[in-house]
Image (cartoon, rainbow, N blue to C red; front, side, top):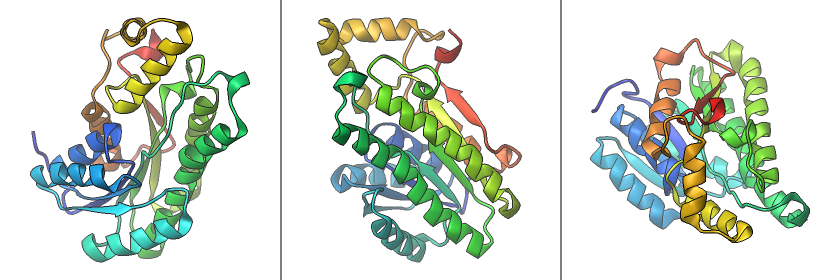
Amino acid sequence: MRDDRLAERHVVVTGAAQGIGRGIATRVARAGADVSIFDVNAEDAETTAELVREEGGRAAVYEVDVTDAAAIEGALDAAVEAFGPVDGLVNNAGVQQSIPVLETTEEQWDRHMDVNAKGVFLCSKAVATRMREAGIEGSIVNVASVGAVRPFPGQGVYAATKAGVTAFGVVLAKELADDGITVNSVNPGTIDTPMVEAWLEENAEQAGTTPEEVLAETVEMHVLNRIGRPEEVGHAVTFLLSEEAAWITGESLNVDGGFTVN
């Protein structure tokens, strides 16, 4: 059902070519937002853009590596030119591999830190600076993970980045409070995405079992006894970007079907 909570707002969503990012992009469009998609996968991001347009929003794709500050600034210039000042940022771009800590290479560690943590820092800094200069009381939502608080084996580096993102969000919320800019995080549980499919396969291989068996065990850890859908994360993000959440900042919302309370 379409609503108008984000009408006439411009939202940037990173990593929206597929999975949770696509669910967020289409959901905020359903709430009336125009969406700028920042992703290294421009081809699949164009598919997301079409879905955004079907929901009634304007959409544009920018091929952006979130670890590249210059690329972010260039894309923001173009996005503002197309749709006006940015009112909301969703830091969703991320990578995940299931790697035992003692088998994690320095390169793998650095890649996770660069995309999952540095990317959030660079995008937040660039967008918040523009919000402050324009006097926009906007919102930033970081997509973290239940792995920040209840990680699985093999999520050493991934969990470290996501825990860092939630802590970073608290600090940023405090520093931007006087500007009227809110900063919050969402912690998705197990969501039906290509990233989770790959995670199931990696865990199955390491455990000598099947992805189906790993999935069944994972589902049992969720009180609602199923995994989530990308748009269900989008519902929560839409709320946090809206005026309804204007008095919420520095928080981390579990969107996990009861995983963290089971």
